[in-house]
Image (cartoon, rainbow, N blue to C red; front, side):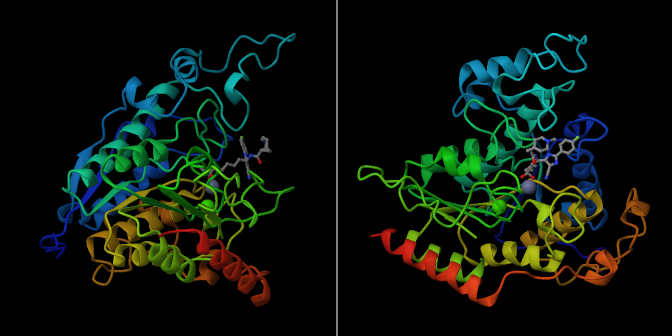
Length: 380
Ligand code: V1S
Ligand code: CA
Ligand code: ZN
């Protein structure tokens, strides 16, 4: 009676493991795995599960984690003691090896399990695309774009996106990575810096001295040595114009889209103005390109808005965005957490007063121009 049915001949798979939410980064830490539960609760309340193949994601194996990450780093992750540790005044941060144990990447109970579940979901999603069993595969528990080969960074320990793209590269000659999280997708960019088979495009707030991670300026287009095929294959910043041109030139066999929801208005960390409508139009645009698509989560620090965005983007994947009611269903578990009962609140409802857009038209045209020039070096 909810009217949500499976689109004919079009398969969407949803990869999720409820055990992810059992993990806690600490009371004051902005990353709340519980936002995944809130998202799932909204997706199910709308009956969207009836239009998808739903899988309980498994944990990634050690072999899978080390397909990108260094063994000594993964070994360390598997064996470090969670905090709080006995206080040692001589040595206040004994585990800052691999950037672990500081305030951004704390050591918590079950950390290894949390990382493996995030990696497992993204790998399952990638394999569904490779087997041609899904047209769109969704892994909201993934998208942890800052993790490096042998280093944790910005709330990310295992780079599930890199693991998934490595799977896609077994089948596809070229994979396009797009990242709409408010932060620069530095870990994914760095992992594929020296190949021309992966193009990375991150849209983010860029302020080298005041905004994490400080990288991703316009001039960062991949190391320009003569023998590096990866040169010019990293682009940062502006959506439809840029993606259209990138797809024309690069002709990807698959697209990996990181949908970090910290670029939404009202986010606790991000300082952007996007409505769910604007954020999700990026997903809609990618779907229309008709190329196998994998969708990851990422940042997002105001759980009610994260759940709204990822539920609406799930509706887009299954093609039901125009027929679901915008009022949050009455029987949604934790419905009171949403405060406003609309799935698509207005900017006034979220912020009261919108933030000023400080990108001048001139600056924006310069960015597009710069990117177009970079693209001369891409493709046959
Ligand atoms: N912005 C921001 C921010 N806030 C925190 C933080 C706040 C409270 C805590 F209890 C712990 C950490 N850390 C940061 C940033 C990292 C942002 C990571 C974004 C991740 C993602 O959304 O892109 C993907 C999931 N860290 C910093 O700014 C670094 C510091 C430079 C300043 C803050 N201190 C705590 C660490 C060093
Ligand atoms: Ca980004
Ligand atoms: Zn982010």
